[in-house]
Length: 203
Image 1 (spheres, rainbow, N blue to C red):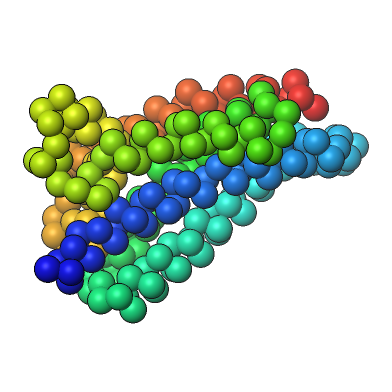
Image 2 (image 1 turned 90 degrees about the vertical axis):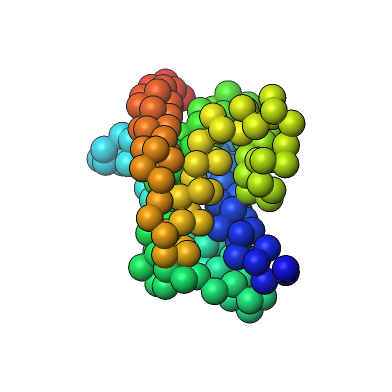
């Protein structure tokens, strides 16, 4: 029924929406680099990576606002999270953790390309397969066997699973939760040092 589909779909849409706006971390940084803003930061007596971390923290607020919009529209359309406010907040927090890790990738991209438009183009190449080859919109059981295998290894699939469980008041799969946290930690551990090193050289 439409009501059941909304219950299934909205947590996945929340995941997709926040992941897609992570690219604006890179777009904003690329724009500021192009305009010479970070050259002015260089003359200030501040911790060198502060502008990058400030941009990331500002983006977390943006992600939170996007989550409020998605959930608010979902409630209007009939979404009823059985997990209540605690379940919704826990799901949003987990999505923000993963989104924060992905944002480091866009910082790197922003320093490799020349224009904000190029950052956007690169994002589509990465984010469309990441979100579409998942269980955001459909049950993987309806997919061909080879695609089910790809979906099962996609961290977005596990993020959507845990988000659905938390929002609907169910105990999330420990395996899926650990998969998301491990993926977030690995992405951050790999890309954050590279991004900060490139930023120092850029300056």
